[in-house]
Length: 430
Image (cartoon, rainbow, N blue to C red; front, top):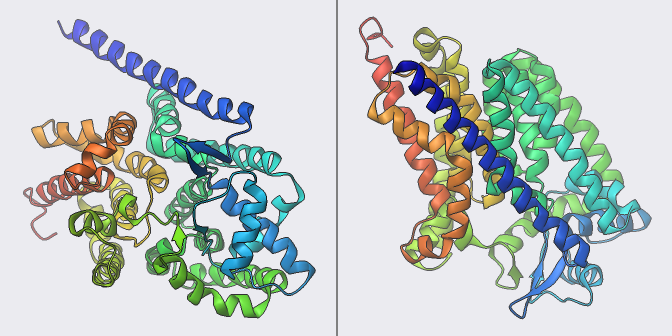
């Protein structure tokens, strides 16, 4: 009977793996179809213009090129709008597609200005795919011992909807994934200086930087700060040389304009999978009150992550051993996603990394109802992610942001199971 159950279990795992591979082939073929039709970057959908996010960073590359040639206000809405419309012609956006990325983003994008947008898109996707595969290889090398679970993790990561969306739109989340994984692995191996160096790349997504910086400082101290200083100094010099001081000084104003101006389209607060997005659904508008609550929750999330690494991490090590690091990393990633004031669906690609980090902790649990539910939520993430996409209108009708809800439930189960282990005899002092 046991052998029969084991065989059935293996067959079911293989069937799930095969399903993910087949779904990935079908879904990524849609991107190939759009490319073949010349409609990937700008097209009409139900009579309305759809502008791919590739246009955003390619526009940043062109603005950086113009800024090098002569003084240019890269955050001027009119200049940005004219540049975008030249890229997307004959399709015109319905409003202002505003780029409020920090100024260090522009020198990083500058090399892509040497190529037409289609070639730049292929280079972007090729580089990020290699980086993602390398990051996953090193992550799974330490966290997953068996061969099949490793293959499954590769398939699950690349077949989830946030990954597909990231490749379809050539999102910066494709760089954020390997950079985030690399950051945590460098901290785990006590290569604090290089973790600090990598922080310069992570600074592009400024909303995740405070929590990462505090954890790096808590674990790495002066070595981490030295790496941050060296990399940020180099990036600052490159930024100054590319866009000049005036654009650097103007960025806070540009950030506020991009997040609050009614002229701007594409920010999409009702679609954000975080506390802000959930509040917007519940109350019907992205008001100033919601902005204040969001910023307060953002600050609380940063403080909670820092306290976890400062006060709780070493105590967890006594109970969970090496798995304490993965547990804290997984929680840090998930809390950062929902507490951030700006989190779209594509950024939930890093949730796949959080799942891998949490996997040893999950395996360490006794088989209970709670651990089974957590297992279904984590291992079934690729399926859940596509269901969230397909049923998004239904979720919004009942005022739920599905990725936000998934994260809240996962965090609740992780906290509950971790607390149970800490309450076991012999760990009362923890």
